[in-house]
Amino acid sequence: MIPRYSRPEMVAIWSAETKYRIWFEIEAYACDAMADLGVIPRANAEAVWKAKDVTFDVARIDEIEAVTKHDVIAFLTHLAEHIGSDEARFVHQGMTSSDVLDTTLNVQLVRAADILLADMDRVLAALKSRAMEHKDTVRIGRSHGIHAEPTTMGLTFARFYAEMDRGRARLVNARAEIATGAISGAVGTFANIDPAVEEHVCRQLGLTPEPISTQVIPRDRHAMFFATLGVIASSMENIATEIRHMQRTEVLEAEEFFSPGQKGSSAMPHKRNPVLTENLTGLARLVRMSVTPAMENVTLWHERDISHSSVERTIAPDTTITLNFALNRLAGLIEKLVIYPDTMLANMNKFRGLVMSQRVLLALTQAGVSREDSYRLVQRNAMKVWEKGADFQTELLADPEVTAALTPAQIADKFDIGYHTKHVDTIFARVFGKD
Image (cartoon, rainbow, N blue to C red):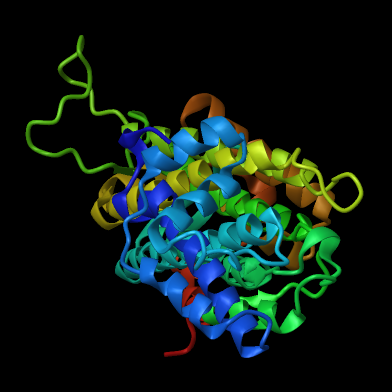
C-alpha cells in the first residue's frame, strides 16, 4: 500500500526484516525441539541462536535468491553465513518451505488482527461517546432517502456501534481461526519430522498446530479472515455514507470537522467537502477487493501448489494496512464530527407535521374507521402538504371525515415528538448494557 494510506506499526509487520526474523525463530525453535528429541545435537541447536541479534541483510538474501530462484533456500544460505555451515547443517531438517512460509504468514495475520482489534476499540469508543451525547437529539429518519418518522442522532450512532461491535466479534473469531501453524514436512505427513516439533514451534509463536495440513495450511481459514475484513470495511462505508448524506448542503445535519486553514476546492473558496468519508468509501472498496481472490485461493492442486502465493503476498499487507489506516481515520472523524441539532429539527419540520401520518392513520383505525378509509383520509391530506405546502394538522382539522372520528385534542396529541423517542433508553440498554 502507498505511504499515503499507511501507518508505521502495521507496515512494520509486513517488512522483509520482520518476515526474516519470524523465519529465523521458526527454524531456531524447530532445532530446539529436535535437540530435545535427540534428533540433532544440542550444540547445533544452540549454535542457531547465535543469530538471535543479527539483522538479516535483505539485499544479500535477494542476491542469493537471484541465483537460487528460491526465497527460503536463499534465507537459509544467509543464515549459514552467520552461524557457520557446519553448525547450520541441521537447520530445516525434515521441513518444507511451506512450513516456514505458512506459519509466518499466520503469525503476521495474528499480529495484524491485534492491531485492527485495537483500532476497532477506538471506533467503538467514539461511536458510544457520540451516541450518549446525542441520545435524545431528535432527527428525522429516512427510508428511500425520504422523510419517514422521527428518530434520534443517538440511535444512529448506536446502530453503527452495534454493527461495528459485531464486526469486532467476527474479527476475534477470524483471528482465532487463522492462528494455526504447520511444521509437518513434505505433503504434511510428518514422515521426516516429529509432530512434537510442530507443537513446540506453535507454542513459542502463540499458535495452535494445524490439525491436518497438506504441506500448506488450508486456505479456507484465510478466506474467512479476509472476508471478515471485507465485512468490517462495508460497515465502515455504511457509516461514511450516512455522514456524506448528512453533510449535503440541503441537509447539513452534520459535517466533517473543517480545520483552520483547510481548503475545500481549488476553484470555489466556499466549499467544505466530505473528503474524509469519500476517502473511506474508496478505501473500503480496496479492502473488499481482497475477498474474492482469498476465496479463490481455497482451491489448490492436490497437497500443494503456489497459485495462492502471489495473491497473498499482495492482499495480506495491502488489506491490513489499508483497513488499519481507514479505521483510525474513521475514529478521528467520529470524534470530531460536527453535529447540528437545530438543523435536524428544522429539517424534520420542513413538511409541517407530515411525518406524523402513521400516528393519525392508527388513531383513525382505533376509532372505528376501516384501514382502507383511514389510509385514504390521511393520504388525501398529506398530499396537500407535499403539493401545496399546507400544514398537516391544520388540514386534518378542516377535514370533516377526520373530525367525525377524532376530536381536535386527539388529533393534536398525534403530533407529540416525544411519542417516537419513548423507547430510546430500552434500545440503548440492549446495545450498551443496562449500566
